[in-house]
Length: 193
Image (cartoon, rainbow, N blue to C red):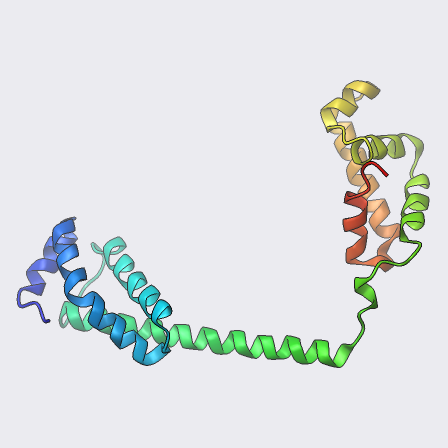
């Protein structure tokens, strides 16, 4: 259904007329969705693309200049969004294939399993911290105290506690760097050992 007075309707939309916007939406939503479906072959994605076009029309209504007709502008926008969507899907597919191939070639799964004596190494690394830093770390991680509570208990400033915790975590990461991503998981989950 082509709207004869679409230029006047678009001018009304530019003046914030929601009724005019709804009229355009009702007239073109289904045909635009069918048009998008021809490109992407997926109804939910087609609907999403068309909704994005209508959303942009409303958001940018005062800035949009239409040279030909509103219908041509909307359908051209759908086509461009479909092309962008297809290109984005191609990039995702290539990346997924790359990740699968890289992991297939690698076959090194050991890094995802904790070393049997990881906890004893973490404990040794914590014990190697300077005494006050170790005490602050244990109060925070093992007893679950907040920085403010630690500061009150040890008669320190909250800033000092924050600094000491930051230094403790940095030192532990350095001491345990051979464990890569597992270190942070275990350091943050050792409460109540």
